[in-house]
Image (cartoon, rainbow, N blue to C red; front, side, top):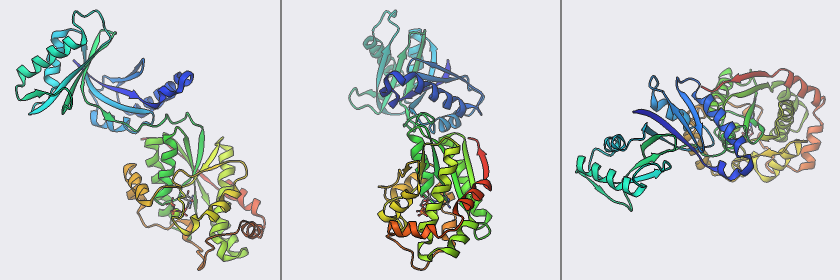
Length: 389
Ligand code: ATP
Ligand code: MG
């Protein structure tokens, strides 16, 4: 009797003719997630299986698979050659060992058996009751379900319940996006949400060393590493922003500091994004959350992107919802560390909260040699290739 992890996928079914493409990408992502484990991975129609993992920690494998987007649920099953006596014995063993209600579900793809699904379920139920008399049958609302899945391949899979997985679409099936990743709570969640829709995420971070500490940068590297668990490998560009900030500070109206900084951040991100073949930028902005996220501020930021759309998956989310997701993806504890982001350097006393677009453009145009500054920042970027652990 072997143990096997059965993997199911959800939304892929919607994809009609593209389905085999989505299945292929999902299989590739599962294999990458399983790379650290000694096991066998196989596909049949509608299902994937992980087998022969005796040498590994089953819990660790399941936890890893729960982060693969595109997977809907999984079940740990026992697999045995289809032979009814041993199937019943295994069902008895798997059934709960303390007082509870149960039912047996049978799926029978193998039509060569002498009994039909209903007959097998009744027989299995009767034998379970005989061996475990503290159980009782409840067909409508059972506490436990013993599933017996008799396949055409000569094997039967028996399992109790299933574990929900991450859902969404396989990463890599919805193009690439460049995430503006700060050290805060929001942007990692924004990247995660786009990855959940199948986007391959790249990231760019602006740091203001020596105005900000090296720890502030390390924090962002840690955040990007956390994302790899969900997003697969992430390329992180760490861009020196100090010179640009100093120049904005020197030449532009201080009240527009944040507005202009955001515009330049977008310009740099777009340049790097295009060089990586990304089709969009992603930010963690959420309407009204802070002064720099009013409609007018967002309009001014949007205006700086010349070729690519800016996706803001958190735009209508509350901070509490975002925090919950940050906990879920395990970035919360890193984000809450107090190291300063580059945005907090050179903060004006009276920042413009509702910048007029024409004024914002006019202020930015005071930034002499802007293109050269942007090119310098891009050339000075440190490129980190973070691989999934
Ligand atoms: P976060 O929690 O993601 O830092 P926030 O609430 O602090 O967001 P802002 O500081 O206004 O919001 O930043 C808005 C968005 O701009 C961020 O979500 C992020 O996408 C981008 N951003 C801000 N600072 C940086 C930075 N230093 N490097 C890269 N992107 C940044
Ligand atoms: Mg921030």
